[in-house]
Length: 363
Picture 1 (cartoon, helix red, strand yellow):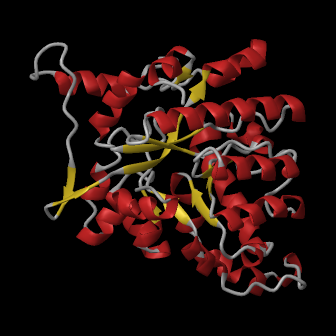
Picture 2 (tube, helix red, strand yellow):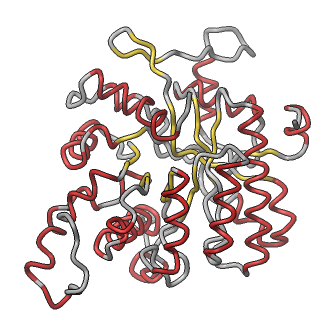
């Protein structure tokens, strides 16, 4: 077993985060140089283990394969400027967030690369992720990476990740090149995920086809493009019958599932109003909105009111905690759950960690 010290020396690395400034502020008054004590989260007097399913990391060893392209590991956005932080910094940031466990994932930047290089990147990601999570299993779990441009290889990678490496599933993008995840070429991957009970965490990569319209002020490529990417991916999985074909597939959608839950009822009317735009050979077993109740959504929607709306559409049992750490989208991911009047105590405990623990088989 790889030692913790050799893991850190060998290049386990996390993207940085401005949240460390919050850590420094919270340490004030406790004595200079002392780390803040982690605050336990309790609901109705009962301790809850908080599990953040949406947290990112990168690994130093990958940079050697990328050469001049290694900058993709630390893009010029807040949260990446601190580069590769050490374990103590990451734990301090989690403690400031009141997060007991992070489920780590690497954003899939390799889909556009050739198959062999992508396979090397994925192999490093999964080996390092497994080593790190095994060494610190009380605070971290991990999603595997997959070489989805080669679905048969992805099947093998997923089986290794689940059966030998102790990972919880896989983090995937919103599409691969011009292929939607509903394409039959990906069916073997979803079948294997269903067989293994692997959770698929869909994290968007944007919609480059809209780059012209999303240019300009406001970082619209992310603010609008990323949620739209998830919305498109989920809609194809529903309307193309993929979720009927694989009813046991376990999916977590990042950023509250994009826009789908905010306007889901329109999907129920689409084929009624415009039958010419719908394939008569695809007969869904349920209304489109009913499929949302078999998908899990992270809580990264920022406010109690947004949680209330998501809860009304998909049910509280389908919401899990997410922060997008180290990017400072939700510096206090627990707070808006605790402040949400629409969630009762049992439901708050579920969102904060109990649902994720059951879904991901975390003790």
